[in-house]
Amino acid sequence: MEPIPVSYSKMKQTKLVLPPDTNHLDTIFGGKVLAFIDEIAALTAMKHSNAAVVTASIDSVDFLSSAKVGDALTLEAFVTRTGRTSMEVYVKVYADDLLRRHKELTTESFLTMVAVDQDGKPTQVPEIIPETEEEKRLYDTALARKEHRKNRSSLR
Image 1 (cartoon, rainbow, N blue to C red):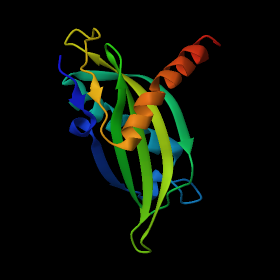
Image 2 (image 1 turned 30 degrees about the horizontal axis):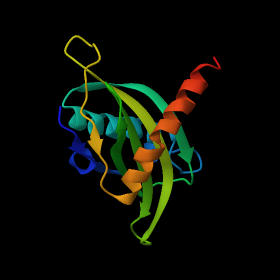
Image 3 (image 1 turned 60 degrees about the vertical axis):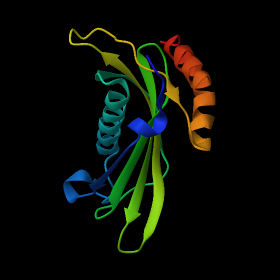
Image 4 (image 1 turned 45 degrees about the vertical axis):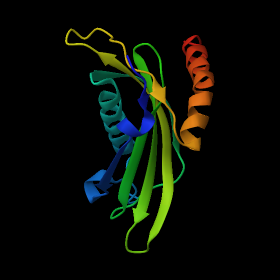
């Protein structure tokens, strides 16, 4: 299986923050952001693996700032590293106040997705080729995040 450049499966989505998406402070519900993150991570992993995927874990979510009604949420995702059947996906979320021309990073997240075949069994995925400095840095630090996931699961 030939390695695939990160740019091949990189995804970008834009969503409008509407009143039903928000709490009593008119800022978006964290759960809504998580749903958007899970969706784009799955799409990215499916494109990379050419297979159906399942979410194995949401490894980390850092809410850095909030988005409000009327903001455009832009989600960007790419595969940072692969295992035999798993893919670590990095997602960044930006809130863009289009009227004030102000864009701010609101959320960063790492997820682990697993490719599955028609029977729901894990299936092999191609390796990635990181291209940009950010992709190379996240590729190089992925094994430390994997070790952290293993250590976290041993605490249960």
